[in-house]
Length: 178
Ligand code: KMT
Ligand code: NI
Image (cartoon, rainbow, N blue to C red; front, side, top):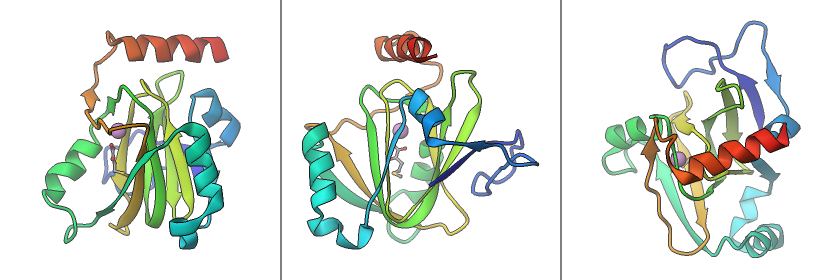
């Protein structure tokens, strides 16, 4: 996993959009935004004690696996668009990359975009209430495990969603952490 501050260009979302020179973001800075990360061996996801331990400790009881590729995902174009529209959720968004790659973009405490490059073996959780979006990169393919506590609710609340309790709570947590 590698992360950086994005440039301001509205060019192709699948490009890296690094600033020149690159401005890297480390795990500690991501942690301050409530974003947590694990590195696992994706070749053994079907029987991996490390994954089982995380799932147990964090109560990630539910999971499925989705492939995002134009020939594999129904309503591909529509979904790609909605993933990239800035939004938040009422719950954590937990994703484990089993194959391929893509970018999660999250807003930092100053509302600047951080781009998180995810690839095989990378697992991440975005906290409830954080503004974010997802895009494929130029490889146009990813296979991802989605995890959830209990029955999944994927509803996106598109920005602006500042009046939601989950957003207010997240902003309070952010300010405490600073
Ligand atoms: C989401 O909610 O943005 C997604 O599920 C993106 C696809 S999973 C990498
Ligand atoms: Ni989301």
